[in-house]
Amino acid sequence: MKSVKLIALLFLFMVPFLYSCEESTDVVDSGTYQGTVDEVEAEKTEIYVKTADDKRLELYFNENTSLTRNGETVAFDQLQEGQQVEVEVEKVGQRLEPIAVRILE
Image (cartoon, rainbow, N blue to C red):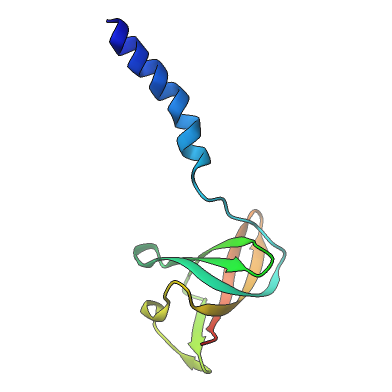
């Protein structure tokens, strides 16, 4: 019985630690930013972009988000980690809505 209580107690102390291990994201003002694609979540049509000033932007694509390379519209699957991008975002409350994403390389 004591071991069950000990395991339960350890679990309760671990939960906040596990949440603190997640990488946080930043909300910036509406505007245009350049950075590197840090992560691509294809099933969610979501990307994370690391900017030059060390901000991490979380961007969920929607039906109005344009994605281009060399002025041509491209599919979401063209995005890859490590690519240089320019993103135009609109701040809506405490989230960022991507208006345009341009692959620069």
